[in-house]
Length: 121
Image (cartoon, rainbow, N blue to C red; front, side, top):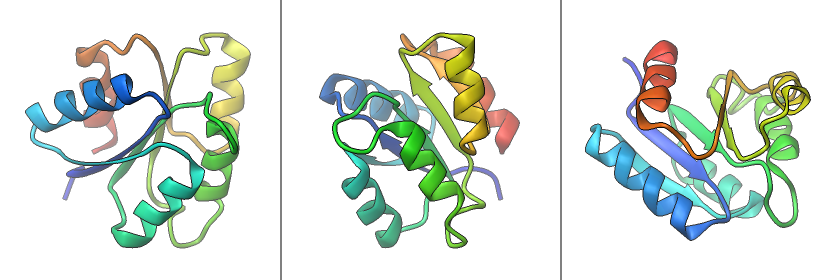
C-alpha cells in the first residue's frame, strides 16, 4: 500500500511547518506532534504509516520516544526516521538501536527525505 499518513514529531514550529509543507506537496497526509504526549495522542487517534522524529525535545527525547513506540506491539510495525540536528555517527547508531529505520540530519534536504521515504514504502 505504501506510505500515505505521516506523523511529524518536532518541538520546533518552523520545522513542523517546513516538513508538513514538504510532505503535503508530495501527496502525503500529515499530522504533527510537539512532544511525546502529543505523539502518543496522535498515534491513538490514527496510526500513521511513517513517523519522522526529532531528537532534541523537552520531556522525553526522540531516542526515548522511538524506543517506546518501536517496543509497543500496537506500533512496532510503523517505521521511524530520525530527523535531527544531531549529526554524530554515535547518535545515528544509537537512533537505529532504539528502533529507527533511518536517520537524516537537519537541515533536511527534500530529495534525501523523499528518497528515504520511498525506500521504506
